[in-house]
Length: 256
Image 1: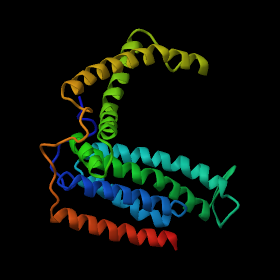
Image 2 (image 1 turned 90 degrees about the vertical axis):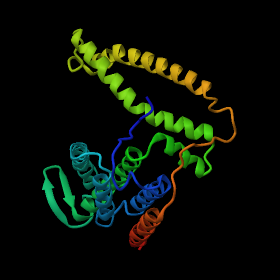
Image 3 (image 1 turned 90 degrees about the horizontal axis):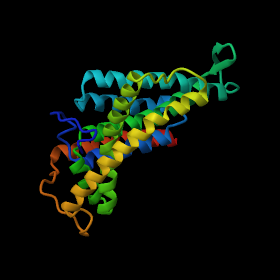
Image 4 (image 1 turned 135 degrees about the vertical axis):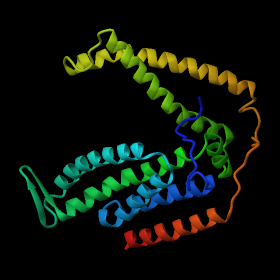
């Protein structure tokens, strides 16, 4: 039940220490924030997260879906932000109402990379790190055990919630529920027969999970012990040093 987003594979990122991967993801986030107004500077960050997805071994199909969906989001951000900066810079493209300038393209792509690069980085972190080790990593950075356990459980329940919602929608459609017909208020009202069963099912799962956690004495001790702890090796040091240098240069570039 608590496998969460983790995918069992043998890959480069699977072999890394969770602490090194977490620092890498935070570096991606920091560099994306600094370079958010210039897509040229934030483009190397995005490429590095694509490479990380490939090295995580999540599969070409899933990686292609993520990249394709991100391209749709890129089109939306380009139309929105390029329109806001249509009076600045040199005109590149005239789309009837919306005028796209070079400044607008830089800002739009920068905002796109601001969202997608950290998303890809943390997806890589969670799909290559067992929930057990995620909790261990959070406690190593002084996060309270109860809070780290609650966070790991919440992330781990996301796939369960998505699957439960999909199953309920399929059942209700077989019963004749048409979600794509009617006015907007009618469509929203039709989601009630979906929301109620999903919440009921999740509450049942959470209750069972709470009984399991209570039987294992989770949350009653101040310090939690772990049987299997990751070991920091030379590979983790080299990866962390490379990440600090690479994203450090981009941070300086963005600040300049």
